[in-house]
Image 1: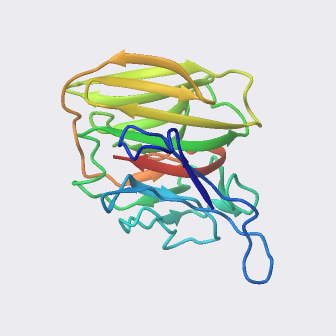
Image 2: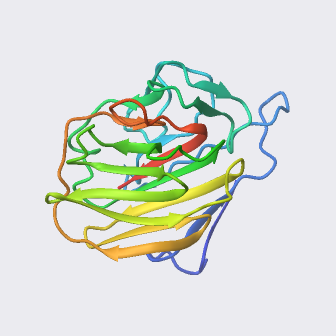
Image 3: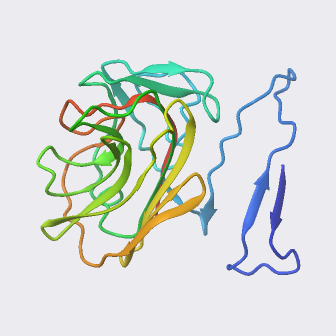
Length: 239
């Protein structure tokens, strides 16, 4: 493992630090999956960190150190050829999801946070439908946060601030059956959406996010009928 900063002569907190894993293998010479988690002053920078590296239906490992282990409903299918190790395939079944139990302190979204995921959508949502990537969103849509794809191919990050849903979005037509990377951030002043490494939308948003007691869900929301159609991998939430 090699670790580099942008300026090796300093140890300043404004330096970018990069970790490179080179020719990693186990004692038998078998290749291994690298799963990294960053800490600052012994505090994890991720709130949850799912690599989906092993086939599990309960106790899906959260590598953040915060113990937000997840479980599945209605059997989304684990596959071995994800971005890092495995991934989960969702077949648009109404009830398929991965859920993370609610935690009001860490998961509410009422302070600065970022979401990250890799996804490969098999087909775009039908008219009036959605493919949910990760969210904490009740069926009423009156609180919480959500990262999803709306018909026909509109990648959207939304927050409910006050009584209004605020969004940043980008049309991603023609991108099905390809693997993509998405990051969404809110720093209590601005919402920003990245798609495949580029900022695609940003807007100033201030206020308090309406919180709720729903679980965090991956591949669906807390209602039904909005299940993802395709593969989701390496889902993280940062503080």
